[in-house]
Length: 268
Image 1 (cartoon, rainbow, N blue to C red):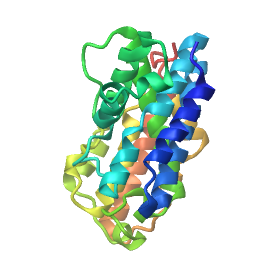
Image 2 (image 1 turned 90 degrees about the vertical axis):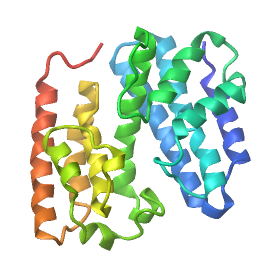
Image 3 (image 1 turned 180 degrees about the vertical axis):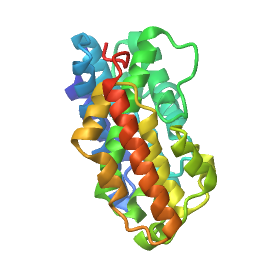
Image 4 (image 1 turned 60 degrees about the vertical axis):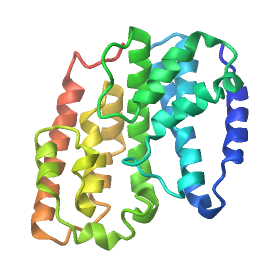
């Protein structure tokens, strides 16, 4: 079986080795996010009635999913999803630098862990995964996105978007780019490369709701009122942006209700 308590001890050791003294707040935010994702991964795996082995594996993947972020912050003093693929770097840390053997003696989970971590931040999961690797890729993607909603609600703009956005005013005085808005209205995830204006960065996060796999994830969105809490965090001063955010609110609310009623949505 997987020794989760030992894995957490190794994680603490690794992160302390890569602590960014210049950005302790960012470092702690990412550690806190990691533990929230770990807990959410276990919760979803339990809701899916998985074996104890797969529940612990989901929990371990949650612990390891953002391990590439810590070297990123230490080296680059920031997080940047366009210039640095933290998931690919996490795979390097674990499987090329061989940190995985510090976390886990058994090699039988290696491919599942590698694929789940690599795919957790991509626009879509790569084709060709076996059933178990696909399952764990879906769990970590849902868990990561669900905690991302919490982070965006709880933290200030300069913390959640680092050097890209520095104040509430940048969001509140921004428009929404046409491509970003059209993707939201078409119920599609927004490509990060389509972000042009400050508000686009925030709308991308809302678009994560179009890329969840499990009904339980949509129940959490509804129970925690994430749509309204995320949208109402800011006051939109541009008339068109305000109207567009209300349209996005309506579209997302309808979409979540459809997903909650979808009997084919994955729960096993």
